[in-house]
Each structure stands twice: as structure tokens, then as C-alpha cells.
Image 1 (cartoon, rainbow, N blue to C red):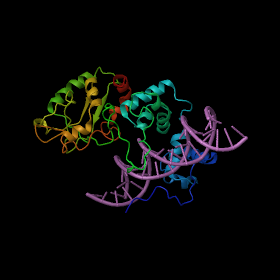
Image 2 (cartoon, rainbow, N blue to C red; image 1 turned 60 degrees about the vertical axis):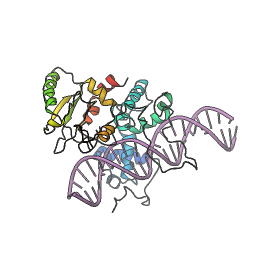
Image 3 (cartoon, rainbow, N blue to C red; image 1 turned 180 degrees about the horizontal axis):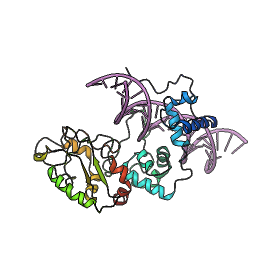
Image 4 (cartoon, chains in turn purple, blue, orange; image 1 turned 180 degrees about the vertical axis):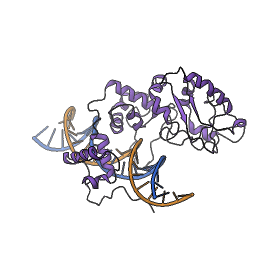
Length: 289
DNA sequence: AAATCGGTCAACCGCAGGGAG
DNA sequence: ACTCCCTGCGGTTGACCGATT
């Protein structure tokens, strides 16, 4: 049995543009009760809207910290660089632009930036597939990133590494790293690997500078904060993780096999997320030019 | 003045992940 | 382990509005 829909279309709920009164009710309710519990919010607040709609209205429009006005040149440059790094991860991009919403940035990209940038994927702003003719009509598919022309986009959706295996060599390396960290600024990327469990996932080259994996040492697992230096990052941003997983075979000590690397990093939900979330500024400054 | 076009943006939709029970 | 609920995300739609014909 499937999940019940968020809000039935025949419940007499209001749709479309929000009225000033609805805004006022929602704003007041959240001021008193705080955010969250969106599903129940409309009933409690006396709004004839679905929870999703309330959430969206709040996040994209009513939130007090929303920044109004045009996107500045600096913000635009930042969006471009972040998009180069992250692709269409609008919420992540928005997270780096205080007061801007993912929806706003997405709209801005689709209507403005995309057209400005020459030679960039989707540069013409036409990210949608060409209008389908009678002849070429196919089932709708999500737009695909051109992996050849956009190799630095971090793939975050397809799959992820849920575990990271650090061999002994890396442990030694880690000791050095810890020493190094004593004089590393707060901006230096650190990744907390906190999901090491009973499975082992490995990443082979080009990540080898940090993960010199081999089968002999594949029995040790531990939690570690490791430094992500510039070389690593450079490789990191260029590697196609899905290939790492798909190309791994069981011979020759390949660690990135399908069985050991069930998924590639998902920067939003995996333990690798801090790389992006905490140190994106550093990433931008060092890689996205 | 009316019709059409194109750009912008708020809102909707469907899906997926995470967590609770 | 499984189901269900809640929430968040990215893609898409459609209303609105100014510019152009």
C-alpha cells in the first residue's frame, strides 16, 4: 500500500498565490510555535493549505532572513563557481548565499546566468531537453549532465560511499596529518569519517595520495579525521565516482569493486558531507577558478 | 489599443532519504 | 526488517508583467 499523498486535491485546499492574510497567519503561527511539523501546521494554524505549501511559502518568502533585491555581481560569481563544483544542487548553493533561497537561485540560474556563460553546460539556459516532436517523443527522463564537458561537477546523486576504509599506511599518514593540523587554519578541509561499520568501502586512484589502499590491509577499520589537501581535492573533484565503482573488478587487488563500494559519496547525506558543507569556501578559492 | 511574445518567479509536483514505531 | 510519516530537494508549470509588434 502506497503512502498517502501529502494533500489531496479535493480537500478544498487553497492553491496558487498566497494572500496577505494567509501570509500573516502563517508568519504569526511560526513566530509562536516555530518551524516544523508542516503536515499539521495548516490545521493548527487554520490555513486551507497543505503543509508542503506552507513550508515552501515560509522558506522561500516569509522567512525573516530572506534577502530581497537583485543578485549582486559577487553573488552571481559565487553561484557560477558553486554550480561548477556542485551542479544543480541548489540547496547547497543557496546555503552559501545568506538570505537567498534555493528556488531563487535556481530561477536566477535558469533565467539569467545560464544564458550568460558561454561554453558551459546548459550555458544557453536551455537545460530542458528540446521540445519533443511527434517523432522523437520519449518518456520523460531527468536531464543528464554531460560528463565530458562538466567533469568537475561532483556527482552526488547516483550513489555514495557509506564506509571509508583507511589502511595502515593511511593511519601513519593520519598521525602526520594530526601533527599538521596543529598549524592548519580553520579553513583547511577536514572530513570526519563517522560511518565506519562492518562493511568496507575503498577508493583507489586517483585518490591514492590519501587512500593508498591495498587488500593486505583491508581488515582494519577505524574512525579518523583526515586532512584533505589540495592534491587530494583536485583529484577528488575530477574523479567520476560512479566509474570508480563500476570499473572495479575483483582481481588485482581492486578495492573499488561493486561489492566494497556500494555507493559513491553523497555530499548531502553521507559522512563526506562536511567536505562541502564546512569548507566550501576553501573549495571555491582553491579549485573552482 | 490590442495582441503577441518572452522573461521572471512563486508555487506545485513527484521522488527520495531519514527516522520513528 | 518493514512500513509509514515527515521533510527536503530538484524539476516543472503557469500566472503575471513589461516589451514589442
